[in-house]
Length: 316
Image (cartoon, rainbow, N blue to C red; front, side, top):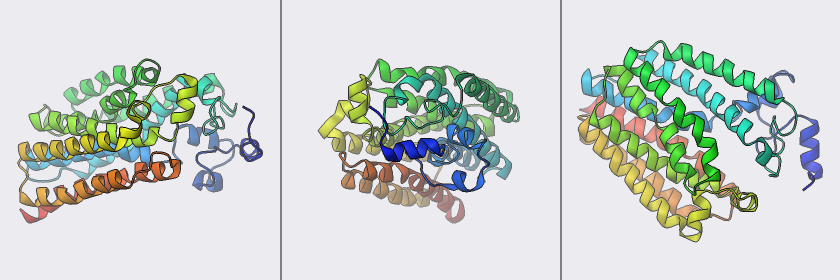
């Protein structure tokens, strides 16, 4: 399918169809823009979704072990690591999917399929981001370092899952919530049942929000022979989302209980539950703009969980 006039204009300007007119276009030098877009620095929602399980885990582990939320430096390191490794993961994913992206209207203007970044340059960019991430990882204890290296296998196989299973969102959940284990390990030097339960809650959350996201591409995915939970669930998506989000809240509550959280945490968690209920109630799986808005709103869900932990720290 040839590009529309608008898509052709965006390609000529080096812009991306699904992220037009943001700060990268205004402030970043033209030569660097494709790399900023390749790392999705113009779309921070993925970084938020990656960092939330890390920060939840750090805060829970800190209050469990020391009665405090933990050091600011720990939160900063995990934030920087999430930013860099999300960029590396997106670049790697775009390398693997470059032929598919070239066939989809929403993604054909991305840096690799549009020719703004060569395959070899993208590979070098992955390595550079990975090295920065490794330097950040070395700031933690030995157990956390080993745990971080162990996550690379999951990251490596994720982009291929949409070719072989209707559950690629599950594998994304395995990768994106590894920080729930990493955060606890970085604070305590070990793991605890609360960390494993938090990891499971995060996986259920990812299954929900990434199913919402996948409904944007379901028609193109079906034509290309790719699979997703959006295609698997179809008109039953709302019921599946309700189930995934119920497991998310139950898991967060159980993790908080195991980590010694008190009543303020559970009261605060009600606001987070209400937010997920709003997503389920208002979703329209045939409206891509609505799906994108709900997907992005999960940044706010992450804040609500943080506020629940803060409320417990302040009021208990």
